[in-house]
Image (cartoon, rainbow, N blue to C red; front, side, top):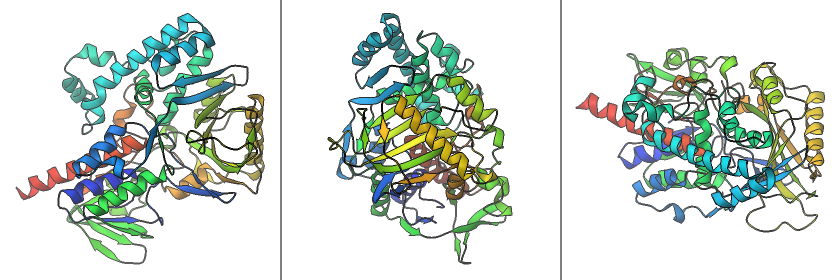
Amino acid sequence: MVGAGMGGLAAATDLARRGARVTVLERAATPGGKMRHVQAGGAAIDGGPTVFTMRWIFAGLFEDAGRRLEDFLQLHQADILARHAWRAGGRLDLFADVERSADAIGDFAGARDAQGYRDFTARSADIFRTLEKNFIAAQRPSPLDLVRRVGRLDALWRTMPWATMWQALGGHFTDPRLRQLFGRYATYCGCSPFLAPATLMLVAHVEQDGVWLVQGGMRRVAEAIRNLAESQGATFRFGADVLDIVVERGRAAGVRLADGEVIAADAVVFNGDVAALGQGLLGGAARRAARDTPRAVRSLSAVTWCVNAPTRGFPLTHHNVFFAEDYAEEFAAIFRRRGITAAPTVYICAQDRGHGAVAEGAPERLLLLVNAPADGDLGEMPEAALHDLQTRSLALLRACGLEVAADASNTTTTTPAGFHALFPGSGGALYGRASHGATGTFARPGAASRLPGLYLAGGSVHPGPGIPMAAMSGRLAAARLLEDTASRLG
């Protein structure tokens, strides 16, 4: 197993549970991949994924191993899904209860949009139910396979693959601020709502089904699944840098580490960005296993600031989003001009909120994030441009009523170049290939690579990005590997 991100952890658990001898090789010092801690101002801050949803995926992983998720993690269901504010005016909370959210939207934008929200939640739930077993939790189908699995073309058509998400939202909401709010769900998959299919409205149902706060932070999820995998017999080696994948007689036959050690294997699971394979970063012999991801179709990257500082003026909750006015310009800048707009949307995960109160004037742990083009392989952002972006982002927050006392002593910055260094081959793309267009998601490879014996897991493969999807990809990779092994030996 190459990589101890979420996909690798889930695959290792299932394979070890089924009797395979599993060694997980991770070049970092800890498990989790993008679920990493960043030190800032003397505090450890979650510097990667912050939203825990689809709890049933993780509960199933633990139950299949004869354990209970609750014995490994302390989870608290969030009452407020997210708090939203606009520079031009307005503040809106979304709640775990649909009717409570509808009432809030009615006060915010009127009765018509409140009903539009109810219709929107029903449509997103319908899309999710149509695709849950036939696509999300299944080995990657072709478009024709998906039609056969769903069984009814009209049901598949209702998933709205031919309309963009932005177009579909116009049928539900008249207030442009609400289109911004719900259009942002496309960014959970690294996409533009102006290019992504309306199918991604299913993300709204995923959140509505439950957002959970993890006691101790998101890194605890990775630690819990690592402990689960070890309880099933998996072995982990950290600080193990895999140089290339060994190929013998046309099959993956092991790996070679940077120190020259060769580890033989009957099969290899690669839990990294698949673009690294296509670029030859795991050796020329494995290059044919997967295609590189062209720059033009990469998903979003980000500039993040992990900050441990006092705030004032705005009642933060755990998840917060601050908008400017021109949403279309933000994504045109990223995907057309390969830049960042003058006033980007700012997401803040206030990691000490939701579990209790933060004393006035006390520092709190924050992750601030703005979307950026995945051009990290072209070099680092100029220092002046990075400073200007931080100044503009803090000014947007200030215009929404929030003061963050961020300075060089309490802030750690990560750019697309930094993400590219952490995740080779990605260019800093945090979600693999962007699922733009009606068939964009079908361009992601499935669990079985084009090189026999090499299997793929992680957010850059089917069923896509996000912590639960990456975990599902690992389970699919393990299942396919075991199925293929049984066929070879049978």
